[in-house]
Image (tube, rainbow, N blue to C red; front, side):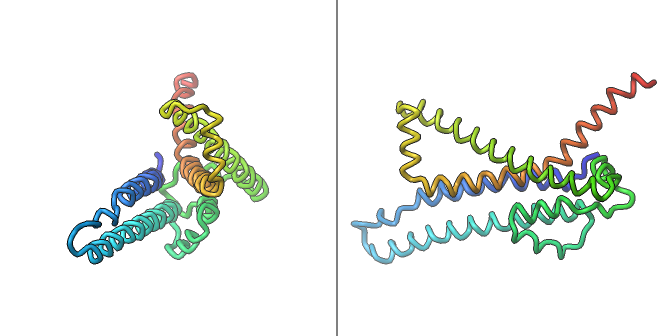
Length: 215
C-alpha cells in the first residue's frame, strides 16, 4: 500500500496555490482609498493599509507552514529524524534530497521503497540523477503547457488575438518570468511526491493483472 504520508504531502502541496489565490483575492479586495470622503479618513486609511499588509504576511506564513508540513510528511514517510527538516530551506532541491533518502522502516515498506532499496549503489546514483533531470524537464514542459492554455483562454475570453496577449505578457516579462519559475518549482515538487504514489499504484495494477495468468 502507498504510505499515507505521501498522499498527505500531495494534498498539502496542492493547498499552497489555493492559499495563494485566496490571499491574492483578499489583497485585491482591500482598497484603503475607499476611506476617502469619510470621517477619520487618515485612521481608516492606515487601518485598511495595515489589514492589506496583514493579508500578505498571513498568506506568506500559511504557505511557509504548508511547505514545512510537506517536507515533514516526506521525512515521516522515510522514518527519518525531524532534524532533516532544515533541507526545507533549499526549496525543491531540498525536497529532492529528502525524496532520495532510503526508507529506514524495517517492516512497513511500500513497493517503491523495496524497489530502490534493491538497487546497488551505482545504479541508484544513476537512477536518481536521471530522475532529477527528467523531473525538471517535465516540470518545465508542464509550465509551458499551462502558459499556452492560459494564453488561449485569455485570448478567447477577452476577444484579443493570441499575439496581442503574448505581447501584453512580454511587456511585463520580469513578473511573468518569476511566476513561471515558481510554477516550474511547484511542478518539480509535485512530480517528486507523485513518484512513489504512481509507482506503487502501477506496480499493484500490474501485479493484479499478472496474477490470474500465472495461476
